[in-house]
Amino acid sequence: MLQLSDIQSTPEELQQYYAELRAQHITPAWIGGGITTEPRSEAVPFVWHWRDLRPQAMRAAELVGTAQAERRVLRLTNPKLPGTASNTLVANIQIVMPGEIARAHRHSGAALRLIIEGRGGYTVVNGERVPMSPGDLVLTPNWSWHDHANDTDAPMIWLDGLDTPLVRMLEAGFYEEYDQERQDFGAAVNASQWHYPFSEMRAALQRLAADTGDAGAGIILEYTNRVTGGPVMPTITCHMQLLRPGEKTRARRRVCCTNFHVIEGAGYSVVGEQRLDWEDKDVFTVPTWTFYEHVNTSDHPAFLFSFSDAPVMKALSLYRDETKS
Ligand SMILES: [Fe+2]
Image (cartoon, rainbow, N blue to C red):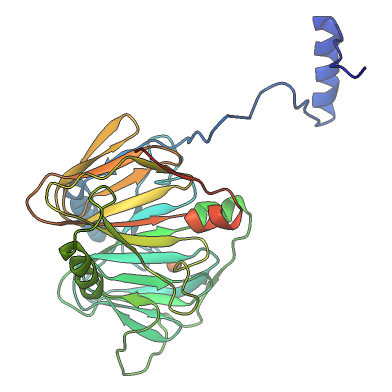
């Protein structure tokens, strides 16, 4: 009859065996664990307030030039992670002052920009000039040339989202500088496949909100890739959610990490055990497999932008999604 084997050895025998293994760079898999019954994130729920972020971005603009910093970027750092907001995705604040450029380069990491402040600056993506206005989403997919310029008289500030922690973990990162500081671009300023104006998204959400809708889910739309119809980029999907005045969403958890940005509105989210209060332009992070619910405490609609690594999880058959009834 087949059965589990019960072998007795002395602690000394085991210690000596483990020491030999260590010397040969071999690790016994039965000690040290490593398996959890469900995902447990190193990251913790956290909110960064605009009232703190904006002055520090302005201070960076006083202290560091774009000739010194390849990008003048403040990385929002999760209290439990080394320098990133979430496990696979960074959420950063970038500032470009009037008259400044951020030079052209490209990299394996995919990036998105969600414009927070400033109107009329632009990003050039593979030779296409993409205008930037508050609430707009601008994509720079992986390995696309991009540079930024501010030809207005006010600071341009935006949220950067990138998959660089994932690319680093996969050891797949390439980086290259363009042979000029800026890319040439045509005279026309067209809505391009890399640009999703907020005006269009806002109008679409408000049309949906006028219908009854599901009060527990909020009104949420996914940005789609204009070529594939799928997520905007292979590693990142973006959503915009409208929370009606007083609306409270049902608690939900998913296998993906998500960073939220409050375009406008006031309320709070309960994320795991924590209550994160938010208002205009704040950023907060929801770790994987952590229940979260949003509450709009104001008498105006709230608009929440979010980006997550769900496409990665889905591609690898790791995605799960659960809503509390
Ligand atoms: Fe870049």
